[in-house]
Amino acid sequence: MRILPVLGVLSLSAAVLVAPAPAFANKALGPTATGYGGAVSTVDPTATAVGLDVLRRGGNAVDAAVAAAATLGVTEPFSAGIGGGGFFVYYDARKRSVQTIDGRETGPATMKETHFIDPADGQPYEFAEARVSGLSVGAPGTLATWETAARKWGTRSLSSLLQPAAKVADRGFPVDATFRQQIADNAAAFGQFDSTKALYLPGGQPPAVGSTQRNPDLADTYRLIARKGTDVLYRGAVARDIVRTVQKPPVSANPVGTWAYPIRPGTLTLSDLARYQVRRPEPTKSKFRNLTVYGMNTPSSGGVAVSEALNILETAGLSKADVTKALHYYLEASALSFADRNRYVGAYTPQSVVKRLVSDGWAQQRACQIDPARALTKPVPPGNLNDSGCTPAKVGGPTEQGQSTTNLTVADRWGNIVEYTFTIEQTGGNAMVVPGRGFLLNNELTDFNFTNTQAPAADPNLPGPGKRPRSSMSPTIVLKDGQPFLALGSPGGATIITTVLQILLNRVVLGQSLPEAMAAPRASQRNTAGIQAEPAFRTTYGPALIARGHTFGPDVPELGAATAIEFTRNGGFIASAEPARRGSGAAGVVHPR
Ligand code: GLU
Image 1: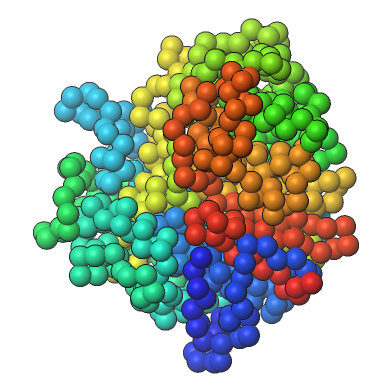
Image 2: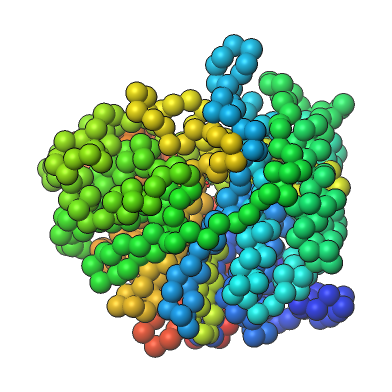
């Protein structure tokens, strides 16, 4: 957990430079908070404090989400920031409608299907080589997302919402063990670039835990955007610096450590940035019992996969009395949904197919594969869109995973909700800090499949001109009988889908409280031979699941870093963050109970 810095002020006014720290800044923000007046949950106490401050000053959920997100760009720079993209889901209490912003990064107009094939030998690049290059960088969508959200639904200007984050960047925040470790894990890549080295490897080493991390360049960039508008990043001076970094990576003459691959330039141009636009797709929508589940449409696969799996679970008549049965169906439903996602979901999937995949009819067709007594052999084949029977199509390919990204959840006293997941893809993005600008670039284009994973069928997630790579980000808002019930999301690459699904299973089917559902040990079955599980999951449930034919792969230390808010009947909030994963998160409410 990050300790709150003495910020001095989190005021929205840029003019006030020095003021006493507000009382809340000294209060520890833990993983659970209950109360009234609005709620914020993020992975970081500084970001949560900034969001709460905006709510206290009368801002709405969108204002608070944007200010908190900008702060995460400072304190969680390896997971998210203005060099990346994400998906913003908004529940408008007055209109009682859910709307979304697709701020996914976009490939260059000249991008070909062979983008990640080495012309020298016709083979796909190694992942690390593709990642730490200009080739992996998509036109970033995060700043355009903040602007669109603030303009459409907020009550404050983006300029004012960037000020608290700029102050945090200027004054600094204490380095914690997670921050230091993320740098240590990336030291070889970061050490290749003068700009990244200077910011994150002072004296050639990751900064010490407890030292103060400042980022004056990012503070200046935020203030420049506040003065000149977001165009500065899409058409102006910052755009030029992004393009220069992509086309001529700032490789150091004196690198720290060695990097095994050539650092290849990319082809993103100024016109790719100038052309960037957020999209506003309809959310995915499905029913689970008396709940309506809203998720993110393509190019994310999150909404489709979460909804399909929930629909499959619903066919099984699960109850909290039989936990093994519930987990058996959870793992099977996840595998079946991943098979379909891999085969059918990409940026250009027709909405008729999306609707079919989230329909109850499709869930019936897929659930008929499941044997209640015996796990299916993985990988399972995808379903057949040309058939309504139980015969599947041919087997599909593997799924990627990651660990980066961040998620935040905000609700205000008027009942508006924001669920927002955003990322720069890998922890540390493509490892290049834009010189003089203080932020890392994304490597989101490596979310494309480098070669066809579905042959002889078509792969929906191959690179293409101006295309957005498929995501797994799953910001999810759930209504119960038409009223807000739960909002949640998580980082974790493709495991995002199973983390969101498992928290819903724990809360809704197994009857756990939200903090219990968040803390419970996790497992992820993404249609691979072995289940990926946290050690506590395998110890607790492994024997019973193995007896049903499930196979476990090697343990993983942790899955996801979720945030969530539950809405209680009397107008209150249960804000929930991770109690332990990724160094634990920070939940807060405006008026604690
Ligand atoms: N790039 C991933 C996605 O969009 C997220 C990365 C991560 O969470 O590690 O699905």
